[in-house]
Length: 348
Image 1 (cartoon, rainbow, N blue to C red):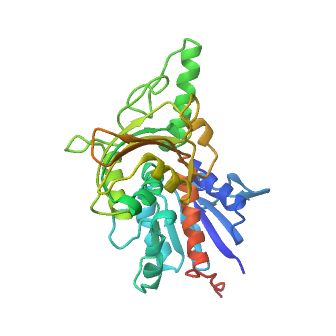
Image 2: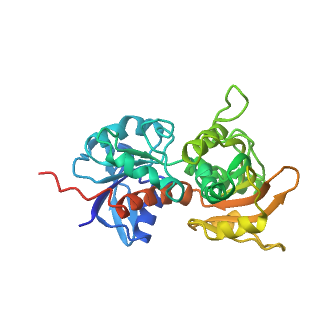
Image 3: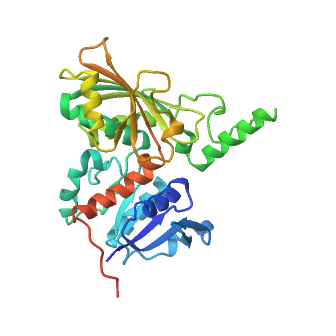
């Protein structure tokens, strides 16, 4: 018996990617429902070789649905996720709404799937599991095996984040501005704070009182919650004119000695990681190669002689997949594989 799955926000970039990944991975679905706002009702989306018609979230009853993959933004999730969870349907939420709530686990399966049994055994649970920020997800996949070996004390990370992290509007703006520049037309800025075409913007999300942006704050808090609260992390997050895939330059300090060769072997054996590290021109992965792939790619692993027990590396991943849709589906798979979630009988 398969599961009844609902995808909320099915017309967005991540929602469509969720549907694609569910089909690709042959997720055990008996029935799939696609939901969005009332204005998107009637829109058609693809699921494998099938075409599904979007229904309005406002009118849907979740009482016989097993899993809800939520990708409709924080405001929608704040209202709807508790309601859906109260009907017995497990919500895996891609927004930032529940990530910092102590009652809700923040999960990257390769890193902290061990928290799931305890949560599912709690009869008072909210029935919500949170997906991390896209830039955090790929980072902790790379850090986890290194932390187990040598204990990370401090991380300095600079991100190079694609416009798809800002949704379809971000992708459309890069496309429009690039075409305008080539045709000598007027470049209009709507989604981003400054022109993104052929430019970099050192701001993602709003500024906070300490001068860091909220995106940078998210990476710090989420890494601590997922991996280890003792880890110190500082981030600089930059929007770049790339359509898909986030890149990160990572500098790590450890409590114990670790060489670049040791790190390379550890990461090669780690789940979710793929090392491409040839010390020659082109011997690394770029956002273009990572787009459409599931792995977190790690390149340019080297020792940092400026600190004791330091390493630096380059990390790239498709933000729509591992940073969002894939991670959500992997959480559902982890629950099923551990026999923590079973299909419910249909409501009478």
